[in-house]
Amino acid sequence: MQHLQADGTLRAEGLSGVERRSDAGEERLAKPAMLRGWRRRCPSCGNGPMMAGYLKVRDTCPVCEEELHHQRADDGPAYLTIVIVGHILAPLILIVYSNFRPDPLIMATGFSVGCVALSLYLLPRLKGLMVGLQWAKRMHGFGGESG
Image (spheres, rainbow, N blue to C red):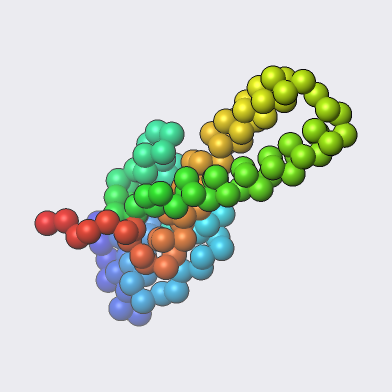
């Protein structure tokens, strides 16, 4: 149900009973939206889950009904993941090899597992962070207009 407020804004009450205001003219703060995205929560309310799966962004937030279907992060999170993992593991490889001289097979196995684990941890969080930034800046992803 929608209600017109005295200040001219439109207030909508979703199926969950949570109010949300149409904030077409209001500034959205990037930092809170990005932190909510990092936690994989809705960038608008911070309560609803943003992801429908590991990397799939929900069409709408189940709590505040904010539309998220147009947010597309594409390859950005993957590039950021590669940069971050590379900058963390490259110095560690050098330090471990210089100080301990482990067997190359042990070192390759250990750092491969670490690389995969860190990548799997960071990728959905960085995608949420980028979707939160896009939402805050009203970028609506980078895909072409549909329809």
